[in-house]
Length: 436
Image (cartoon, rainbow, N blue to C red; front, side):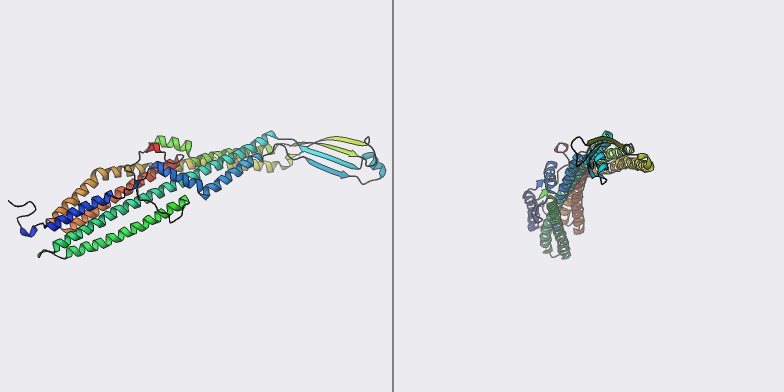
């Protein structure tokens, strides 16, 4: 009976050093996987980083300053206009000056226009609310950028780990090929081909490491940290995030999207402008008090006159009518802009929802079907190659397919999380931990 490690054909005997090399390959890959366990990216951790970015980013500071300016502008709306004080003197004969008074003091006050004041106040409040909503939109966009940067960095770490594992596998297979080349009937082309493949994969690994450095720098800049600050190794979450239904997403989008909220406030402001234009067409009234006295007389030589005035807006009727038409058209344009933005955001939400669901299914398919079968194929062909029942090209092609499948699974997982965070940004804010 033959030893299980040997074939009837002595040309296909498996040498003991070859078996040692393969065993060493398995142990080294297992050990490397156990070392330096990376930190898994979670939604709550991304949320904390987003808060850090929002707290220090210049765009948020600028938006906050604009909001504070709009808040101050509300207090600048006046119900009462400034009174007007007038002084005058009469140059005439003494008789006329004595009879009419040669010193005149008058004060004139425009009466308040409550409806115009309320319209201007509503406009100022709408501007403040618009800027608050715009600041929230800026914060959401910045949070999404942070989430994308973190997930890109985690994906880069995943790619680096996969490429590193592949390089270590090739290094071990090169040693195996060198052991096989010692056989008199072996060929040297296998070793050369493997060394060439190893050189290519090492360059690919170096490129992935450089890209990882770029993503780390981008994340540091978003957070306001030193660009050269290091990041620990990260890992993508193990599972895709659950996806919502389109009906639920539509309700949240229309209620909570800050851009739509800002545009609704703009519509309110445009309506206030139209109301103010109609109020300006109405007459405005003023009251005044004028006191005339004679400089050479006594207190009995004082005359007091009460005056009432009004403007005559009918002379500029066409101008006021044009102002009203302009304000109403701008209101209609703002309303249509709101409706168009709702459609656009729903279209974007549909695309993101489809992308998230598609990538979720891709990840599940790779995890449950593609990867197990690819790993089994590589193992089978590798053992067959050792037994000279398969070619090196078949082993390399199977290994490349496995590496590509693993990378595609990680890319789809990262893309699914990015789509989920994008949907959360559209519907009012960063992804909450409860949705994980």
